[in-house]
Length: 166
Image 1: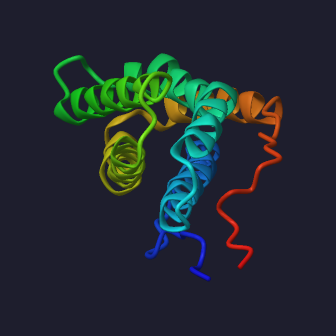
Image 2: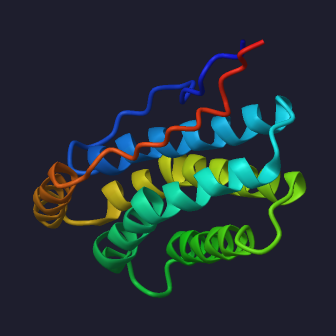
C-alpha cells in the first residue's frame, strides 16, 4: 500500500499562516485519495462524489479565507497573487465539471492542479507574503485565521474508496 503524502522538505512557516498550511496537508491528502481511487479502478463517480463533498465542506472555505483575508495583503499587481487567484479559478472550474462528467482524466487533472497549487503556495507564495507584509498585519491575520480554524469541522465520508481492501 502506498504511503500517504507528506510535504517532503519541512518549510519554516510563520505561526500566523500555520492554519492554512495545516489545511494544505489535508488538500494533499485529498490528491492522494483521488490517485489511489484511480489506481484501484474505483468507479469515477464514487471518487467525484468525495471530491465534491470535500470541496463544499473544506476546500471552498479554504479558498475563501485566502481570497478574503490573505491575498488582499498583496497589491493587485503582485504576480504571485495573480498566479494563486488564477489557480483557484482553474481548480474551481475543474471541480465544477465533475458534477457533469466525472472521469479518471478529469479527476487526475484535479489532483495534479490542486497538488501543484498547494506546493506553489507553500514554497513560494507564503514565503513571499511573510517577507513583504508588515509583521503586525500578519499577526492580526493569524488571530483571524486561528479563530476560523477553531470553527472548522472535520469532513467525514463513509465510502473509503482509497483503501485497497484486496
